[in-house]
Length: 340
Ligand code: NAP
Ligand code: GDP
Image (cartoon, rainbow, N blue to C red; front, side):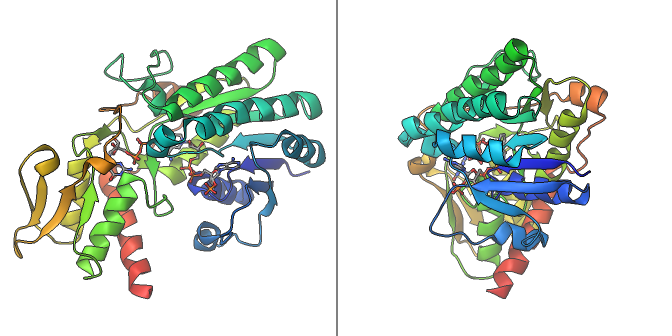
């Protein structure tokens, strides 16, 4: 009999890729998303799975809703991907962020403990938990130092996931994933803002993009490969915590340069801090500028992951470096914009 997976946040980037992966493995996929005005499934359309995922409404703020869902679906595996996932917004909405990203996880774990205690549980933890880093390369043993309400909430839910494993012998995994991107990434995140923005400039649809801290360094991987790691964690004999990362990082500025190269725009930088500008050498036009509006009250300056546990135990390896990733995203954005 096929397994049933319940994926929360199914209409997000990872939810879409994970649905596609699990469908290809013969799972019955029930996806949940909160009710919104705009229910268009653009990510499912992109992956051609619009009719294959059974999508239900479930809000992580609503205990009764979660209890009913777990009792009714009786999932074999639960992947909790739903979250207020944008760090920047978490500074303005700390209470909502904690309610969804921290207490939402308790609600879900309690529902599983009560109505389907043998279901396996995956928690979408994050490299943001390392925040003000304590070690040059971060692995499962590196202490956390969260720098945003988002990251604080995720540390809480990480340890709740560990605690339900240790207290109730439940099969719970925490995937500590470093930034992962794709053509399905939300437009507010910096990589997609850059590839979409530079593609728009290339096609003459936009003059410039405005960014924040260009010096921030991230370890960027490809979301499609990271959802395979999630699945592998859930198939292992014993539950555990795993870092997924590429082991390489670069600055936001360097990511802009990569996208400009793809667009055949020669970019030169002038000025520093909020005065810094990226200028197209040929036309002399400013195509990148900086605004404090995109700075964070407390920044995570640098992240660099060490995924050797996942390499060894799960045989999980990333294959797409950030150059290949940006090419994939830029090409998809150019094609999408040309069709508009
Ligand atoms: P995403 O695209 O933002 O997807 C998150 C989904 O959760 C969205 O569909 C969102 O719906 C939904 N959601 C928000 N509030 C909810 C609520 N109260 N109840 C139910 N659903 C709710 O994020 P993603 O990039 O796929 O990431 C998946 C998970 O991994 C998230 O938990 C994220 O924090 C975590 N993570 C991501 C990364 C990364 O680099 N992508 C790295 C580490 C960890 P709306 O669209 O309506 O808001
Ligand atoms: P995060 O690592 O989850 O916060 O992912 P983001 O893609 O939102 O941000 C990655 C890094 O890019 C952070 O250090 C941001 O401060 C930096 N950054 C610089 N400019 C921007 C911008 O315009 N938007 C976003 N989202 N981040 C930016």
